[in-house]
Image (tube, rainbow, N blue to C red; front, side, top):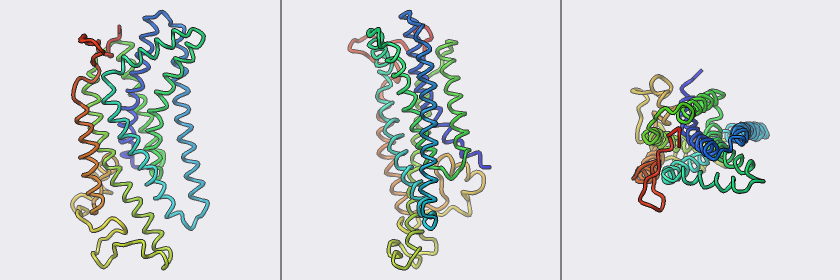
Length: 322
């Protein structure tokens, strides 16, 4: 069993889980300050239902994949890589957007959650549902991103799910350390490190997605003579060739094969491939320059010590007595 496939989902779930844990911790702290501790069960209910719904979405995706894959067995070799490619694109879009958006909004996170909780508490009849909805949406949002990433690698079996559970467990532990025991953790540096790892993981997912699309088109193209023209890059151009990705630009299979250690770790974590083609290299560099560039520009300023509309600074949200 290749347990290295659990590393990417561990990193993603850890980062997204800590984001959700921050929201939950802030809500619990605000309820305690407002002397509304009787609403805490609604917070825990939001967490539980959010996790359950995320898991249900994962099961639903797995069912759809199985149904589509077995509907036409003769096209299984086409459908499976095609679905992996589609889910990869969705995961790339969602993770990239959330990475940049969360980084930009992080400095105002406490104020935003505080405002939402205050608004919910002012509506006495709907306060419980307001608190529940806030926590539920935060958990489901993070869980959905992880489900998409796992769906993009569904052929790797249950191991990625183990990484997701482990990441969630550590995220919960960090939340307890921050808000229950009052232990100081540099959340700003944590998110910076996790953000860099996530950029590299998603960049690797770009390479994997293109390889899946290439496999799907190749399998479909060579299923009959009528469709062979779909592969516009033919074997006669080079001994090692692709279908739609152009010429090979890097071949490290003899130095660092992707199916042996440590290549298999790099493949699972950062999408390393010992054969890189032109379209993959252009897409990889383009992703790092665009999304990576946007992320690093968004790091300007403090993460969780933002300003309101006054010169005074907010307290760090990792204060247990906030």
